[in-house]
Image 1 (cartoon, rainbow, N blue to C red):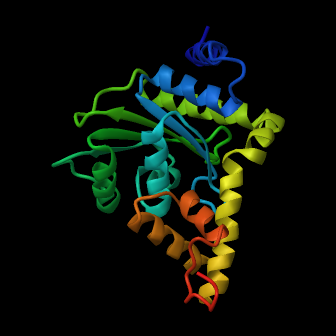
Image 2 (image 1 turned 90 degrees about the vertical axis):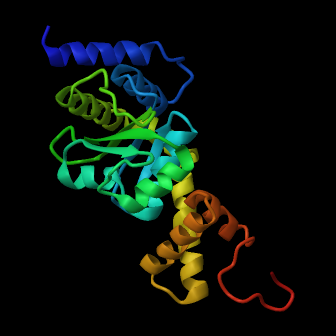
Length: 237
């Protein structure tokens, strides 16, 4: 059995041990976390595109750091998509970083940690990102070397691509729905402030960052009319 075959067998076994009621992306994400020896993980598709969506994050730390990179348009994930290789970011006091704004904000929110951003490119094209997180300031080796991590990420993307019905079912009411809400809120803010969609997204991201919340939460408040970006009209809020 080749090393690649062995990896696929280990991935299949890890997915099989996850309760069958879990969504496909959830089972794959948990399997990747366990195989890599990380503390938490996230799977995000179309990372640098407008329709970017995090399919699953294993815990609040992973979810928060994924959203923060989206809000700031900065971090190891963005660089990994561009460089097509694994990027590592250490968080904590005294840790140097190629992404200073992200590193400072992330350290304030989650403390000391190490992020491994692994591009998912099953057919050469980067389709998304597998992000692995380790608690603690001192970077420690993952359970898999870089070349194996890249193969694991590629195999995970291929599994998602080859089961489109399962992924579509998840997205219809799950993470994709939150992205639809962000697009709808963008349109409302653009109309309220007479901005381009790009500038309206920037306003939403700035509000999320300043309020230490997520884009999805800000979008929900905009759609519910709880949050408006223009002067209140008589009888309104």
